[in-house]
Image 1: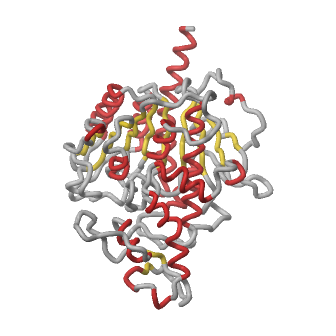
Image 2 (image 1 turned 180 degrees about the horizontal axis):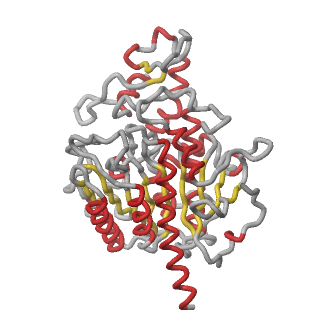
Image 3 (image 1 turned 30 degrees about the vertical axis):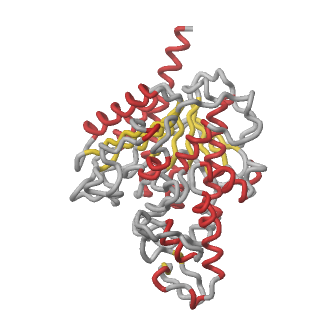
Length: 441
């Protein structure tokens, strides 16, 4: 890679579109933070997925001297055009402070009490005497031989929130049962810092979207966060998701959260979130269920046959001011590109009718035919690598500002190739549009 000083792609009139890839270095090569504390999961390897995607897009690692800071070109012979931008404390002052990230930014879309739980759960669990840690809440790491090692924290059971007489309580055990919807989304050492880095990535993405609001074909954005977020609801954690990054970006471009934006950038009035993950974006739907300014469309496996089982049905359309602003498009078991394309076109048409000015795409890669997380007997999908290119073209064909947020995808070896295919499709369509505009001008 080349160190970035000045860059032609920074010009507003650059003739080609390019992607700005925002990422953080948590868990990447040479930084074991987060990854080492996470219990092994048969499917979920988020730190490895992030690294694989970066490499597939042309990222070559740290700069000489070990620095991650600053921007790096994507080489000209790589599959997409643009640059990588490492987002960390030094690049986002003063927003990197933990209290600001959680209490001022993440709390825009999540319940403040759940935010407090996420911020304090590991520390409270770690400080608790070993004998006070209920054995049913412990998730040991594979091969852990140190008897003093602190296991990850998972719920022993799940609260029935709709039942009278239930509440979160004050103890970390009680709150874990209250906020978690499954035991596959653990609290572990290093998680908090990774989530804070992911929130910083979201924050930078929304700033850039505001800057490029009036030139949607010139820039698109990729929030390469570590942990997916679309199953995280306003006050719930689950499905490997803790903070809903797509929801946060959508909300922030409608309600910018930093002080210098008035008069400098024009905020958005209407935004759509399009979830193309294999599973329904149930957390995103719940956050915007009764809001009129965000349209949420989700294309996914039928929840009668796969996770999340209780959300994503076609008759769930929002309520109150948000009625009709949720579109669930469950597909038949084993759906291939023909059925998927039809659903995607329907979602984009509904987004156009809504009047959205930008689309935040929850980019899950587990729709690929070989993804191991799918319940093939009762659901499943069969997209191929070539289909992701077509998906990118259709998304860009909406001629709206695009921001992609990394969600699921459990084939680490091919995840990056699928992301690159989507972006190739986006660039092919955006560049076709830009060329046509130049000819007309």
